[in-house]
Image (cartoon, rainbow, N blue to C red; front, side, top):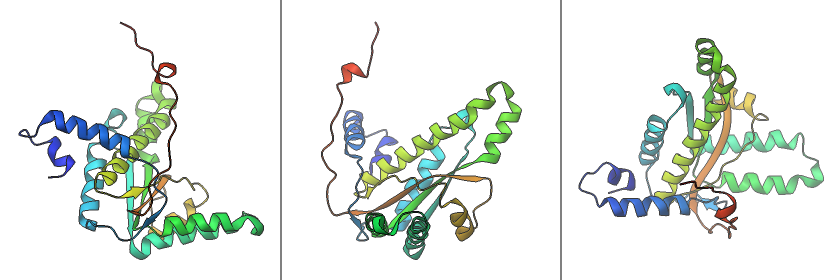
Length: 215
């Protein structure tokens, strides 16, 4: 039984589910060293993403999130597009580091592209004019939650991922390559795959400087 199944199984030990949830949040890290040797099916990955898109909250229940999942040659294609786009703007003498990054991402099994539908957001801005300036902010917040849910769910299945932001540099070519509606705004890219090296050490600022509690 997977973690998502446990959440909705009334017979599950809820205390253990809570511990599993904490561990999942803690273990979700940026994993750059990935390869294509994943142990779960593409159907399972699609199930995870569909679940996350359906249940991640959005302001006014706008459901403005849009996701494109790329496997196989399609996954390779997005990182070739990114590589060639960056080649045009990064000096040749400095391009080797960029090329290595593209190789890292391309070595993975798949990529999740995160979009927000601006047509939905603009509709809400017209309908609720008093909150007009807030809807783009709320849209980004909702997208961030979706990214975290998917990232954590992939980690629970033994996959490693990172979150990348090569938008808006690659926006036009991505839309052309996969016939993406013009109203979809690219927010982030998440390459994922089988982790072949752990994440590095992570330092934490004191919580006493970040959290205030009043009773």
